[in-house]
Length: 149
Image (cartoon, rainbow, N blue to C red; front, side):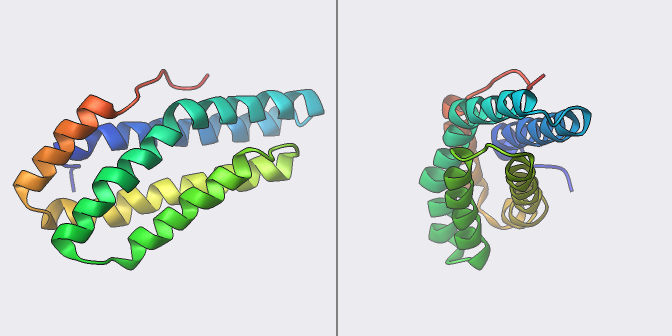
């Protein structure tokens, strides 16, 4: 199913998050020296602070309350918020290749779950007016960055 236009800003941020995961995984495969691990951890922290913090805020402040208001409680929403908290805790302690891999594995699984499960579900069930209001807010507030290199 095509992604509803209202969710495009969040989906674009998801693409950036997945690209970050690929960059980190490839970087670790090429070079797992302490210097490269530190550089990759710095890249993760930068992307987290610049874009993912904004992304989590948009979801928790705008999207998830709209879902609750129109569709009621959904277990997946609580699970996704729990993922946000786990990722926030992990980002400060990225010092070893295994820690970077654990972070990218969780981030990638989280993003894919939002796209494949949550977004697929809600874009067909939220009222058009609610989606349009969310889309306007996302367009105005979503941080846009260049893909990590």
